[in-house]
Length: 129
Image (cartoon, rainbow, N blue to C red; front, side):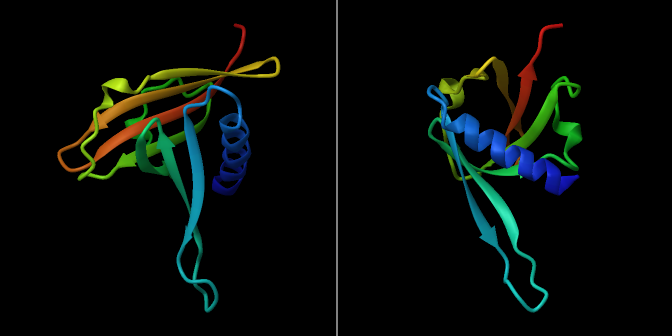
């Protein structure tokens, strides 16, 4: 499912990021050696407000989630470089994105460890219950 999720997130986030009012942008880099059995790995690099980090698709990091998983269709961890001393008070924890008649919600949660700092990002669609 990783590839499917990657493709869905690729399209979703790129589309959403182009919408007015989106406060983040994403670019991709490939790491690894092509050819000779070398595997290229797609790395999401994300800037949310002025915080630069690496997006890690949440596959084995479910223990870090604080969200309603039923609605979330894209989950990422934004790993903040440990040397990056950032004032996170300016980061909003919820953003609503309107795309046509659909509404999406981006939620962030801080998770500070001793060594690593993470922002957990979840992208979900808001539906009428």
